[in-house]
Image 1 (cartoon, rainbow, N blue to C red):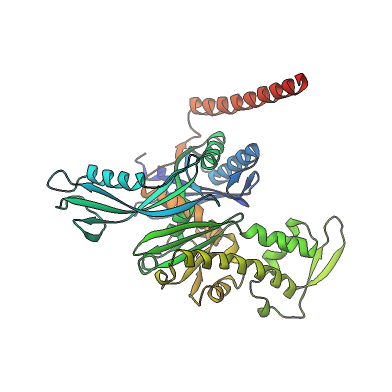
Image 2 (image 1 turned 180 degrees about the vertical axis):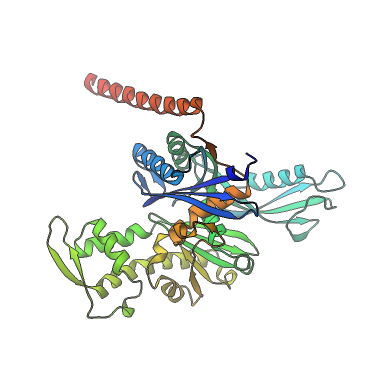
Length: 426
């Protein structure tokens, strides 16, 4: 697609609390102009894991439909975010001996392959993402682009992220069944960083904390590249459920109370202020102190930041974050969250990370909860991974997608019938 009007990209964030599709158009100046957002409550996902495949497929399909809007375009491919508590990372080195007079692309590939081969993997894990931190030619480190350089030995410093292959594959399969092609899988912390971090923060060194619904992603950047990727199995849903249990309200009511009256620092809330809540299972109303709500939220937020501090201590990375902490994701919108992060993380300066440097309908994605989707779309734009077809695509494409869905439903019914038959025989 060479027509500027057809240069659309789509990022798909399949999370525990929401499924978000962000569509943007790359203009003549290569700026990303947001044209549409599809946001639906997530069902069928927990901690980055598919727990109900059909529900997950329906949510993805609905998010894509909303993102398309009335543009007359049909999204056929997306960049999909990958996250979850199963994610871990390691920094490794690889080496290649330069066969010619200069470093070639083949030499770079051999060095990277050498580094990846050194990553210890169990049978259920695989490499899902890798980032070159820097190269060295004949021992001279800090080289970003070695192609064409003269030398005998090429070394690479590689950041490798591993994960459970089955978990990732199940998410990608759901995207396919929803009728779109997962063109690329991208680590969500990397996508979020593209959306919210400045080049100066990444060069100087900073910590990115993305508080999602099921997990909190932690990544550290130094010298312009990522050096730690980790996930904490405590996040926004835990905050909401704490509130629901203590106040005896439904999770939906707890989420409303959190959004409308929540605060991450209890002492900043007036002692005499009260909030009306609806008791679970009834229409009865009760008044509860707003400071109590803040105390419940603060306790769990402190646990999240304590997990971040534990990761930084274990990897000895405190000294690599002079630019401070950037918090993003839905959980970052809680008032006082950035100040609490500073209090919990040895006084490091903290700020809220929202999508930046955008054009078009920027108001649609101004909140931190949209950062990952925006970052995925921006990476797709850099790769020129155009995602749409005019007029809804060809009849053959529609028929193929419909046929795949129908066959999948038939297979499910056949398997259910077979299991019932086996159970009766036994």
